[in-house]
Image (tube, rainbow, N blue to C red; front, top):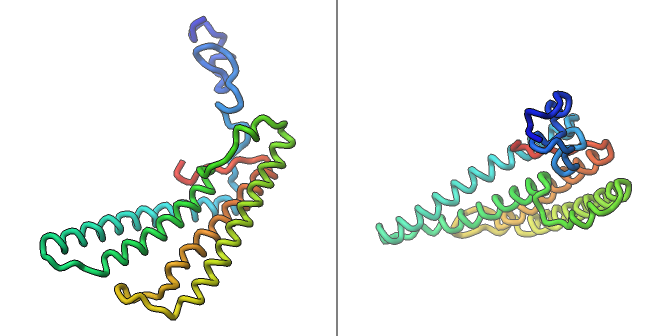
Length: 199
């Protein structure tokens, strides 16, 4: 049966495969509406801002490496601060990327096993999983803050910034992970779906 031969009520239905006329599976359509409440919009803003900052940091990282190569092999004068700044940028780009990955559900998971459960148990398991991620993020932020305060008085000789700034990246990542995981829990309870900020 061709798409033209399908009844208008079937062919016009967006939940039906236009080629075969069969209903699309749950995985091919979004069963839950997008989460658009105030907290979700705030998290979406944080996620998009984190992505922008990560891209800026990545560009800065590339420029630092290029500046170091040019200084070493062309001018025979290696800028020592370039490597230290590049390493600093790596920490923050990674921290922001990890947090955004948690919100956009880009982290590693065993979703294939969870999908075999009934809807009721799948919801419970997903809430528990996000609860563990909240705990992980909170521990990351707490440990990072502890090391930040302990090392803040130590100064990096090549960059002139506190050593504690390295551990501050863990605090940023941990706080964002907690916020984004709570957003997922709220969305599950409200039977909504968290849409990636870059969509």
